[in-house]
Image 1: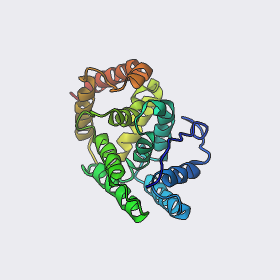
Image 2: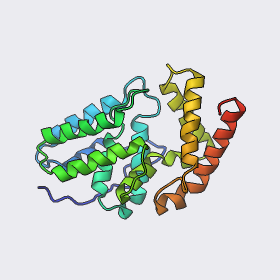
Image 3: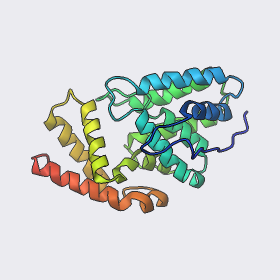
Image 4: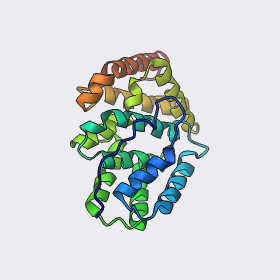
Length: 233
């Protein structure tokens, strides 16, 4: 089994700029965690992930979302139990994304397992941890483990962006659901927002509560108020 060490690369990802060395970062973590003797295989897996995230129907769940998540990951990695597992889960958590389906996360987790096993990863416990980290991003149940809490907070950290950026992301998510009527989409969206609003805290970790809690709650309240005025309640 490979000896894994955490190596977050803070110089690579910026929240709103271009990224440099994105592919090299993925190849490096794949080598640390899965197979260090087959860099060409890691490059091929990266290229296939890029193809997934660049599908034409995506507007929000793109490489830009992964870049944002990795930026937030970089800030919090030192607080995690297994940052390498969290990072790999971030790379794969939206690899499969078909709007309106309920098994995107499961298929994304299975895609990771497929590539890990094809690359010769024999660490079943590590594979299981990443599978569970991806599955917790369904947001259908509360995360109980520290790293699960971190990946959930990272996935939803865009709720803590300034209003204009938060609203922009909302428009992009709506564009991915173009086949849904406004009534169907926004009534479901309000229900999701209210579920988030009713949590004792929006974020599960102290790190993200201190970083974004207030802004996230203000954004949710403002958006729900706006949707209610449009008749979606």
